[in-house]
Picture 1 (cartoon, one colour):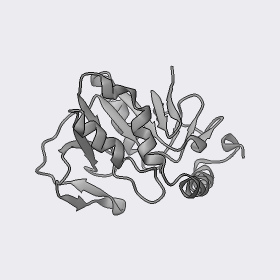
Picture 2: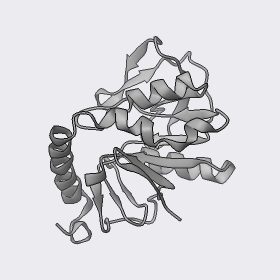
Picture 3: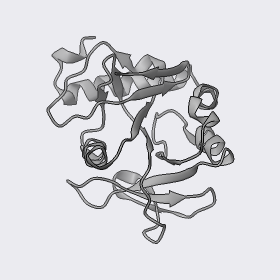
Picture 4: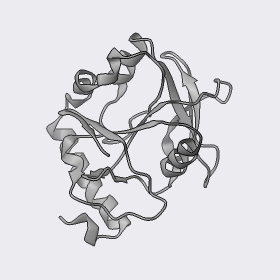
Amino acid sequence: MKFTTLNKTKARNAAKMIRHRLLDDNPGAGPELVRHWPLLGIKPGIVASFIPMHTEIDVWPLMDALADAGYTLALPRIKRAGHPLIFHAFRFGDKLVRGPFSTKEPARSAPIITPKTILLPLLAFGRDGSRLGYGGGYYDRTLEALRRKTKIFACGIAYSGQEVPTLPTDGHDQNLDGVLTETGLRLFD
């Protein structure tokens, strides 16, 4: 399927069907992320992740390994529509609250922190580092705002089968620096 010939809504629908099949075909993919994460061997820092929903790859084993290696974890909160995400410190055992779109978020009282690495969910990724998200623009606005202030590493978390040659993109879309899959880490220029 040529994703560039589809509008973003149709591309999202096609990517959701592909990802659903990939979940069924790769039930143990989440722990493989740990094996391929090269930053476990460097000085720990702040890593923002996400709580997997629906058919997203299970990032919990990687988050657990990062915490064990001394990294500070963060999870996003949606401030309001049209704004960048805010990252709050997270430790295993912290209470999570219900957020928009059936998400789980840290409590507002959790400290706000700025990550150097952001692990992002996605529906598909292009060979050029483009990312097809869910359509709210939250991560695009967040990456744009953070990149204006500091150097960050934006890493998509996906099944290797979510890669497509190209994706439909708009001027506000932010590319990834890399994608971590069950088969390895792919870096983009």
